[in-house]
Each structure stands twice: as structure tokens, then as C-alpha cells.
Length: 171
Image (tube, rainbow, N blue to C red; front, side, top):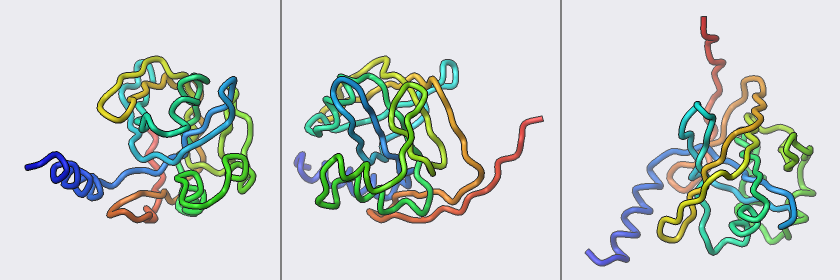
């Protein structure tokens, strides 16, 4: 197989892998910006660490790297337009992206989405380069969980509502 065929098959395979939809935000010396990302997952709870994969050609990549602090805003089902906006599917500037919805300043401080299902604020502790992307290991410093909401997932190149369920409390 040629690299192009393998790359397309990989992309098609990943389209069949359902993923939470997140808006990664930052603010600091590099500026305020955000990007929609589905390549986000947990690494460990000791210490609480997430990984976020960002294409190195993205403007947001260098800003995240320079600022070193982020918020992983896990989107609820009603946030499809926010996801589209921060994915660059609309023609608005970065400033307009933030003006279109309600944001607060987080603990670190970074922009946190007021109605996100989960808000994970952290510091970029390590960055690994893998092909076209940087894998950023984010040490979580503050967690904000909202009450049960339907979640937004990305599957088959479309957004979908995933009904929420209240997790059982550990005894």
C-alpha cells in the first residue's frame, strides 16, 4: 500500500472510533485561543494526567506550547455550534469564537466554558512529537464536574448526542 492509501484507511478507521468532543483553551503570554479536539484521553490518575494531540501546523499549537496552561472543556450535547466554531468550520476570528458563548476565568487562569460537562484545568508538563502532531501531557490541577448532562461525541464524521447517566457513587 502507498502511504496515501494507508493514511486514508487510518482516517476512515478513526472515523469509526467514537470520541468525546472537547474545546481546548488557553490564555497567557502567547494569547487567548482555543481549538476543538477529539484526540484527548486520560493517561493516569496518579498524578491526574491527560493527553491532548494537536497538529503542529495549527496556529493554536504554538500558543498552547508558549502559554503552558490549558483547560480541556468536555462539551455537552447542546454544544455542537461551539464545536464547529472552534474547529474552524465558521469564518469567525479567534476573538469572535470566544464572544459567541459564555466563558469564565478558571483557577490557573484559563478560559473555562460555563456549561461544559467537565472542565479540566492543567499545565503542559511534557510534549512528544509524533509525526505531524504533538502529544501534550497535561497535569490536571483543577477539576470541575457539572451535574449529569448529555454528552457530545464525534463518530462517522458527525456530531451525536450521547444520553447522560448519573454515575454511581463509590462506597
